Length: 173
Image (cartoon, rainbow, N blue to C red; front, side):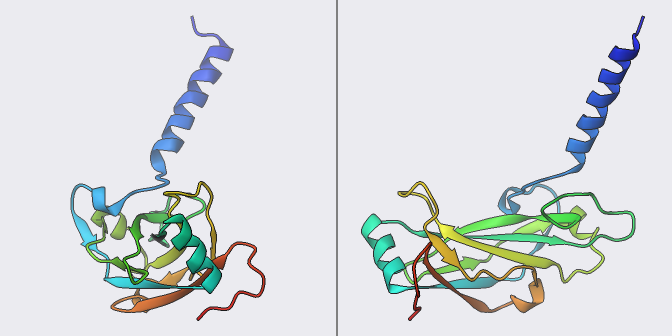
């Protein structure tokens, strides 16, 4: 016989399981299986302050650029998914090359999620950090573009300026 307390625990367990299965907090588009949509190619060029450039070079540290893709849903197609919009398409991470450029090419998002977008000109948020290959903590503070539409990135190289965290009066060359 089921007690009230046991029934409440079962209902809560099922509810939490259903909530967690409805929300994706991260997806690497490179690992997506099934039909996909190509993300328009773009690049991010990092311009460092002299002190940031010297610090990263002395540590043999590099820079990682992370792009997040999300958008607003068709009516009834959204899933509450903070800190992202209701349709989270995924993210991609790139290390910069020897010219401090990260190229986002061959990035894909799931077609099933893309089909749920009310506007196919979805949002891109960029986060630039030191790669933490050597230093445990992020060393950089950057002028990352937040919540810009994919069409503003398409075929372009977007410049981002970075300096050391707590670097006074940073001058970017």
